[in-house]
Amino acid sequence: MDKIKIAIVGMGNCASSLIQGIYYYADKTETDVDGLMHWTIDGYKPSDIEVVAAIDIDKRKVGKDVSEAIYAKPNCTTIFYPNMEKTGVKVTMGRVLDGVAPHMSNYKDDSTFIISEEAEKSKEEIVSLLKESKAEMLVNYLPVGSEEAGKFYADCALEAGIAFINCVPIFIVSDPEYEQKFKEKGLPCIGDDIKAQIGATITHRTLANLFKDRGVILDKTYQLNTGGNTDFLNMLNHDRLSSKRESKTEAVQSVLAHRLDDDNIHIGPSDYVPWQKDNKLCFLRMEGRTFGDVPMNIELRLSVEDSPNSAGCVIDAIRCCKLALKRNISGALTSISSYTMKHPPIQYTDDVAHDKVTEFIEGELER
Image 1 (tube, one colour):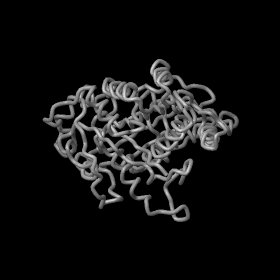
Image 2 (cartoon, rainbow, N blue to C red; image 1 turned 30 degrees about the vertical axis):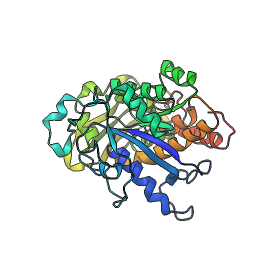
Image 3 (cartoon, rainbow, N blue to C red; image 1 turned 90 degrees about the vertical axis):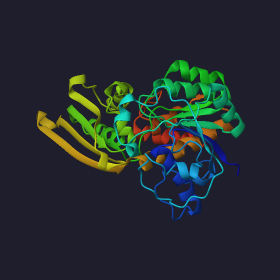
Image 4 (cartoon, rainbow, N blue to C red; image 1 turned 30 degrees about the horizontal axis):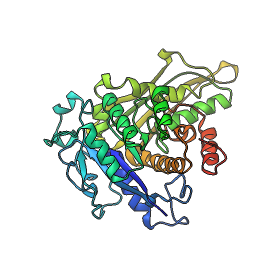
C-alpha cells in the first residue's frame, strides 16, 4: 500500500506525539492495539503515514532531522517512542509572521521559542518544498493566535495543490470563502481546531448533551484549564485568544437545548503553570435544575497529557483526508471535521458525527 505523505508546519508537542505514534503503532496488530479510534481506515494503518516535509522557526529544530527535532526544547510532552531512527527529512525554516507572541521572549529558553538566525523562506520556496516533497497534505500545528501565519500556509497549500488540515483555532475551513478556494482547486480540507480523544471540550459537550437528553436545564457553566507547555504560555497574551475562546465556547453552545447568555458561560484557557509541562488540568462546573426546578451541579477535574490526546484525532483526520483525495472529493470534509475539530463548518453532536464518519469511510456519505 502506498504511504500517506504529509507535510507539517509547527514541530511542537502535538507534532511530536503524532510522529511518535506513527512509529509506535508500526509493530502493533489489530488484536493488541489500544489508544486508537480506528485501527485502519480504507486499509491505512497509522504506520502508513510518512512525514516528507517539516517546517518550523525555532533554532533548536531548524536543520535537524525530524527524528531529533520532535524531542528538542521547548517540547515537553511524554516521550513514548524514544529511539526513532533518522528519517532523512530535515526541518526547514519557515516564516515567523505572527507565530511568535512578543511576551514569549520574557521566559526561560527551555519554555519558549528561540527564532532561528537562518533566513526566512519565501512563499515561493515553501511552495516548492511542498511540491518537491510530494506531500499530499499540509498539517497546520502553529501556535494559537497565528492568524496571519495560518492563512499564509493555507495559501501555500493551495498554491502547491495539496490538501490542508487545520488543527489550530483560526477559522479557515469553517470560513466559506476559504473553503471555496479549496473546492475550486479540487482539494479537500479538514478543520478547525483539533479536539482531544478525551479532553475538556469533548467531556463538556458530552455532559451538556446528557443534561439536554435527561431534561435538565443548564443555567451556568465554566471550563477552566491550566497547563505548562508553550501553548499555555503563548495564550497568556489574551489578545491571541479570541478565536480560541469562540471555538471552545461554540463547541459547547452548539449542543445545548438553549444557548446560554454570555455571562453564564465561560470556557477557555486560564493560566500557565510551568511544572505541569504538557499535562492539562480541566476544572469544569455545570449548574442546572432538575424536576421541580430543584437545583443540582456537577464539578469535574480532568487531567490529561495534552498532545498525545489530540494526536489520536489527527491520525484519523489524515487518513480520512487521504480517502477524500482518492475519491476526488474537494472542499470541507464535514463528517471528520465535526468528529475531530472544535469549530467545524457544520456542528453535529458527537454521536451523529461518529456515525457520519463511519458512513464516510464506508463510502455511504460523500463528505
